[in-house]
Amino acid sequence: MIEKITLIGLGAMGCFFAPRLYECYGENFRVLANGERKKRLETEGVWVNGIRYIFPVMDTDVKDPADLIIIATKDTGLEQALADIKNQVGEHTIIMAVLNGVESEEKVAAVYGWEHVIYSLMRVSIVMKQGHADFDPASGKVHFGDKEGQGTGAEFVPGRRVASVAKVFQKAQIPYVIEEDVLYSMWWKFMANIGENMTCALLGIPFGGFRYSEDANWMRHEGMKEVAAIANARGIMIGEKEMQIQDEIVINIPPHNKPSTLQDIENKRKTEIEMFAGTVCRMGRELGIPTPINDMFYHGIKALENKYLKYDEWTLIQEA
Image (tube, rainbow, N blue to C red):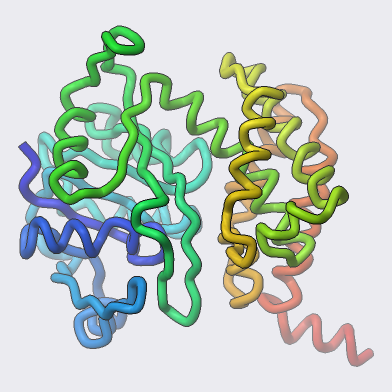
């Protein structure tokens, strides 16, 4: 039975969970943080859909194992998060890493073991602006599953850990889907994220651009095809059917919404380009699958990053 829940990462994904878990579990829900971030969360809180929240915050030095840990950092913060949750992991702790990408579970398991890990992914569009998270709480869902489930369709029975997490989300009224084939769903989402997130970031356009630009959609589709080829080589069969369904999904996203990498660029933050296009390029090389579109995404977005992460050097070049 899950009674204590720890969340690390109170950005866009963390804000999807935090208000509802706090309302349901009270002091048994806590956000993990230390130092200046802990002070800021305790004094300033966070804003979610126009409401200011101050959640219970636990220092990383406190040893108090949780029954469920949700890691909602960016990929760039995962390594530090894995170190920070050490005192939160007990014998029966379940860990969900709701990051983008397809490798975070492997990274968590490498530290804490597969007996603690279940697979998960998010399907939600959240706009973060000046520390405020805005989204439709009813439109997004957390998807999760593992390899313990048995049967298919109406006869599918989830594994014990997945079933216990489902009870938490049901109690907290957090929309969720238990996936029979969670790896298939993760790769589908990764494929969509590559096409949409990378194209929007490189071109500087919101999701609405896909409603009007054939050129943007060409880039999106070609990028997704490369991911599908890699997934197929790994035994995960996604392709044209999933891309067609994704075409319908993307045009129904609010047109002014922006994916995370474009938000990072506009706010001059380090992006997750290594986890997105970088992963595709690396896997492509390992499998002998060409990835020219993702090579373009990778180097193009890295160049945009350099304009602000290496501002002094860039300024010297421009002034020369």
